Image 1: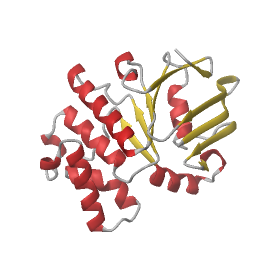
Image 2: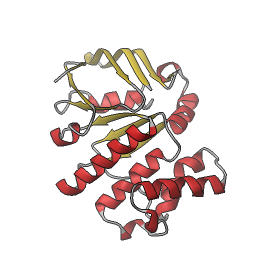
Image 3: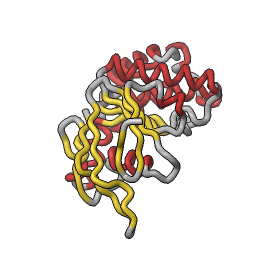
Image 4: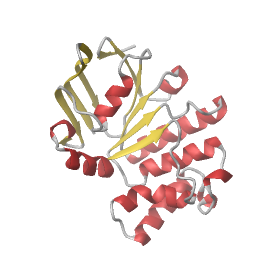
Length: 218
C-alpha cells in the first residue's frame, strides 16, 4: 500500500531525509520512532503529499504522490489516505455521525451510503449508540475513537496516525491503540504510526527508527 524509494528532503543546507526507503503492505501496521527533530513529521507530510520531496518517490496504492500536481495530490489524498491526529480535529458544531461522514461528503458519496458507512464504523469502534451526540458530550478516548472511525470510513488504502494517544491517559491510550491496530489489520489498509511513545510503537507489527535521515531496525 506504500512504497517509498530514494526519498530526499532538504531544508536549506540541511538534509533531513537522505535516500530513505520504506515499504508497507496491506494490513501491515508500522511504527516510526525517533528523537525530536529527526524528521518524523516531515516524513509523514511527504507520505501524505502535503510536501514535495527533493528527490525520490512516494507511491500510495500504485500512485506516486511525489510526481503529481497539487490538485491531483489533493484528490488522491482524499480518496486513498485516512488520518488520525493527536488533537482529534473533530468539528464541534457537527454530530459524531456527521464528523465521521466528512470524508464521504468530500468524495460526493450519496447520503444513504454515507449514513450506512458511518453507522458501520461507529458500531465497529463501540460508539453506535452515540451517533447523534455532540463532541462536547464525549470523553477524550471517545473522541479519538471517532477520529479512527472517520479515518477508515472511506476505505482508504493507507492510514496515517500522528501521535494519536498523546492527549490520552494510559488506559484509554491502550484501548485506542488496540482499536487502531485491529481496524487496520482487519480492513487490509496499510498503517503508519509516528510516535515518541514506546508503548504506542509496540502496538504495531513492526518498528523502524528514523535516525540521521534514514530508517533502520531498532
